Image (cartoon, rainbow, N blue to C red; front, side, top):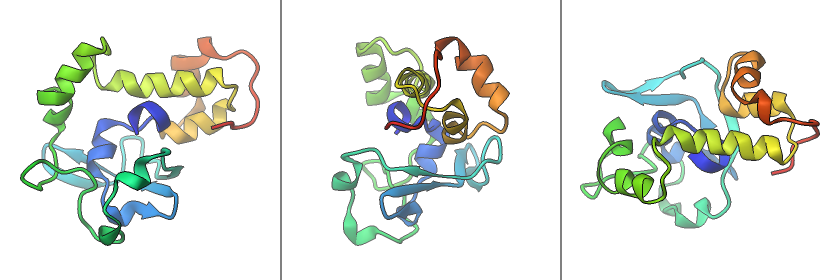
Amino acid sequence: MASVIGLRISEILALDYSDIQGEYLNISKHVTRNGVIEGLKADVQRLLPMPKGLLSLLDKNKFGLHEPLIVSQSVKRLSLNYSTTGIVKELLEKFRIGKFHNLRHFAAVRLIKKRNDIHVISKMLGHKNIETTSNIYGRFSGSIFELNF
């Protein structure tokens, strides 16, 4: 979800089965040290296409329920530490990715290089202003065209 549609780790960990709307994910909350909080970093709620293959990994009996999409072995919502410890940290190191947030950057650059519209990418990333997207990723854009997932 981070490397394909550019979700932040805090948004991924806040997802519940109730956030699935057909083939889309409703991104409207995030995880903090205090738990799940309604609202987002830039206060930009969005409906994004679900990455291919994700639907087949989910428990269809839980659709519509307020249960976390991703859970620990003890069936509890994961904390923000999930991105800096354990298996995730090992995988990030193994593939020389660095921080989890770099997966979000990868998604944005990939979308830009596929000639997606910078306005659409900005909305997907949940940036309040297109200037934020342009300042961070503008150097990767050439000609801008329509969205081509």
